[in-house]
Image (cartoon, rainbow, N blue to C red; front, top):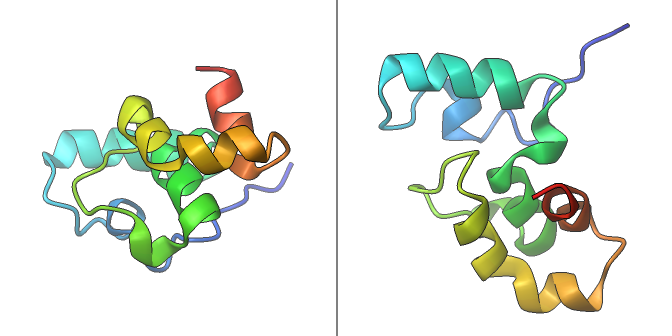
Length: 90
């Protein structure tokens, strides 16, 4: 099976390793979300709904409550959106 990088990996500070986060947390986030797990990333959900430029720098891949807050109005209108997949498991 071929691994797939997040479509926003080239501009995401978590995937790029430039986020202001503890190095251990960065490694864990990258291993969990940047390769293959990006469909469950809170940052990806916001980027998919609002655009990568609207993702707050401080939101972590696991910050689903904040991501939901940012996209909920739009997500509730579009149940088939990428964010719906993230929040359906949450």
